[in-house]
Image (cartoon, rainbow, N blue to C red; front, side):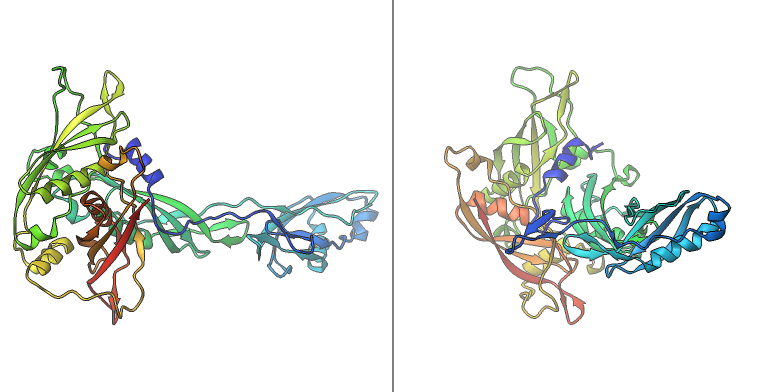
Length: 461
């Protein structure tokens, strides 16, 4: 399968420009007066009222044990006591009365008082010499579980490319079992992100719980997108569709089998060529290391220089499964060709966001700036540009910058990157290739989704 170990490595190390969920804090901090303030801790009984031994049971020499679960609220009050186990239910009222009369200190998480479901075990044994201390044991927390999740529809924009994909997200789930927050942590292509978010926002969970206490939770979700081969209009393989082929080794030996495609971004369409309606072709070779990452991309030919630069930058971003030979991962070289062509005229009702934006730019349709939007633009998926391989091999670590103008369409996808300025062309095309993968919440103006034009500065350090 194309979604494999290489994909998992990409998802694990994807660079994003969003805040990290689950940031940890120290267990305690020292205040100026040298006292300690707890930032983590379980609920405790600060003043335990010893349960009364029922006189009729004590005189009858009846002994037993009571196990009670209950919730300690953030203010230290209690609620929802449940007898979990009782040797003799005639002891119940005595233990419940003691819990109601006792005083508790709430649990602390990240420096805040939080509710916690705890368990207390109390033994009535003779002679009755009870302690004024009682141990509260927090019940185990059970994570939220999926009740139902809509299917993830394969994006129509990817049908022509036939690539499998995956999106990994961190979810915040509230105590009602609804998804209240999503952070995209990895995606093999930005075109998969919107469909993944749509499915996750409609997913319902059995809430996380601790005894009878329902809790918010954080879960990770990995959503696969598998191309249905039954939809293929011809017998071409996924490598043929994407212009990939093996390069015969110089020594004449047999090339390893073609590796699975994990990440294969489309090259951006150079804006001057797009606006002029120019089409053309480019070809590169890709030297892959044993892990399936590109260690060198060399331009073979290009009908226009900018077509070649765009294909090189996109191909440097690619990731493949390791090529295998004799059961071992080996280096290999691939060839990639790409044909640049302005979008064909199709009915407005069925054109993709990418084709719509390119058509509007070619016909001079005005696209406004982000000024006056209902809310500031919010990215939901960002990746950092790769340092161009031609520069990464330099003895000194190169630095540079680029400014890229993009259009964010009505679905929040970045379209039509244009290099406004760059330290050099390599930085410019690397930045534009990365930005073409970004996704935002749909821009809204007056409650209606709209397209906007913005300039994004990127710095290579």
